[in-house]
Length: 225
Image (cartoon, rainbow, N blue to C red):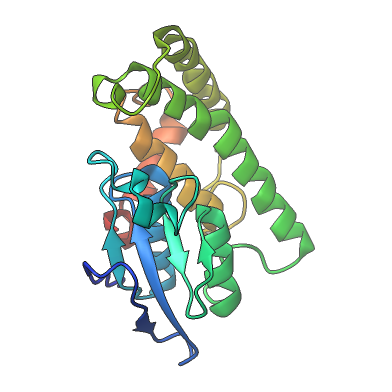
């Protein structure tokens, strides 16, 4: 079970037992999908990392002290013991995987690695990005953070549903999205499904394979991360 410890200190490192080798701090973005993706991944790995909460809605990610950590004001970020900062969610997950290869979530051989990467790109480009466009350009809560283009929000809604339909077909007879076990691609899929709830894009009832898959992911302990 993952244990994330909050701290208000921005500059200190904290001990995480990864074979007794490293100290880290995780700069979390709360409900932000990429931050949650890392938390779900860490939960699947059963890894504890202390966190510093970054409140996007209050603009914490735009403050000068955080920009020293993440120049593009992105969340999440991972600070290593040598002062290195990693800011892309999948880059963070890959780093953790290299330190803690079991359970394997990125693939055990070239074929698995390629299959997982293929699905990662499909989910990020064809699902996560359209959902983000719908939410960021259409939700009133984002008006103070985005130069909103409402037409772009509306244009992306059917793209999300179109991908849902295709994904429902791809999941016929499958428990997981690409291999016969849980991988980081399933982490990304779950994050997308949860993110889609923000702009109220729900999986249609007729997409039963997809609904069952979402339910299976939601029943995993990591879904609470």
